[in-house]
Amino acid sequence: MKNQLLKDIVITVWDSLLAHKLRSALTLLGIIIGVTVVVLVGSILASLSAALTANVQSFSPNVIYFTKEEKIGPQFGTPSAEERARKEISYECVKAVAELDSPLAVSPQKVRGSYGPSADQPKMSARGREAITPLILGVWDNYPEVVNIDLAEGRFFTEIESRSRSKVLVLGYSVAAQLFQTNSPVGEEIRLDGDLYRVVGLLKDDGDEFAGKICYAPYETIASEYPENEANIIVVRAPPGREDEVITQVTYTLRRLRNVPVEAPNNFGVNRAEQVFEAIQNILAGITVIIAPVALAGLAVGGVGVMNIMIVAVTERSAEIGVRRAIGARRRDVLVQFLIEAIILTSLGGMLGILLGLLLAFLVSLIMGFPFSVPMWAVVTGLLTSASVGLFAGIYPAARAARLDPVVAIRGN
Image: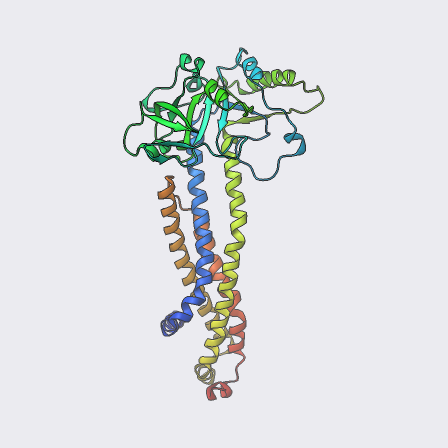
């Protein structure tokens, strides 16, 4: 009996949707938008997290970054006054750390690009094409000994090229694809901020769009071409299992050179490789916080629409309600019927939103070049939220239908 009732309710809802296609579409639009945003954001975050995890594993876990800022990479919020007042890490500090015995390898890193001290992006072009937001890192020639670097073609620049401040570059695969498409960039010339550079190597495609934008140049060349950029990052590779020892020794050296009093905290940041990607994940979490109200607003609008269509349905079907009450249906039966109708209506919008969200997330991952991932929590949240909206939006119309007097309802008044 209950199965037949549920089947009849589903048929009634479907007939109502078909009878009022435009009204039903507008009613479900808010639900679809809200659930789509939830699934889209959840899928993109899961995909980016998977890509970042793969990068953490590809980087050496025993790599440590010493920076002026407390945290390396992009951040939300404004640095404290104390952090802004810190002096840059000098080249003398880099050389002092490089002379220590405990690290396996040390290299400075001078950044030219979106994560550097200047807001402007480097302009890189070749063959009439321009690279999109490349990130130039000036490093020593021993940098492949510090951080794992895989080359698809060519070589890394040499010590002689570094000392002579040669204008040579090792291109990231995304930048190479933008400038040279499928052709090999090795041996070609590109223009960086107006100066000609020769490409000596191409980084291997590891499937990460962020890493694909990174290009390497000799530290001495970047320091000479951009003298206004005084910022340095010290990248240190520690022997496996001796990371804490290396951090202690480098920290002591930097505190001494930067004249930090014994009782004062460090005026520089110490970051492991994993923390570099944690900073990006924090940004992704911040994006979620920003977008979540949009999804909630869409669901709220959808809930109001569902309530409106259910109230209209009660009015249109008052005769049906009266007949059901006259032949023995209880108020509770009418109440349950309209609640189930509202839940089915919003759940249908939720399923459409999930499908649309997954489709958009797949397209975004395809365009951005990171693996597509579907978090179950986003799908479950979309379904449960849409059903909950239907439940709350249907309470008033269902209660109104249950309170109708059978005689009055049959008359259609």
